[in-house]
Length: 77
Image (cartoon, rainbow, N blue to C red):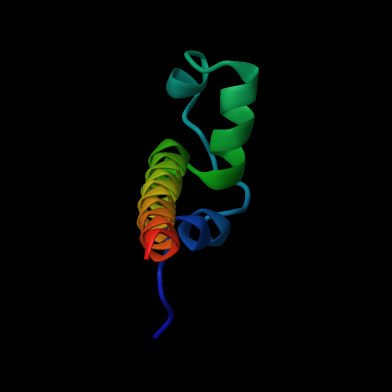
């Protein structure tokens, strides 16, 4: 069993997707190209990826803060 991540979900959904004409008329050319390539779930998948990236960056900032505090403590000793 493989791990499913937002980026693998987006990549796995790649291909040619049929978009109903009624929907296509409300999309910009750029949006239509993305939806045709990645499917109707593209906005959700991109949002999931964006949220996962943001969470990772927030986590990294917290780790850096902790490490800086530990370094400052060691220097003060």
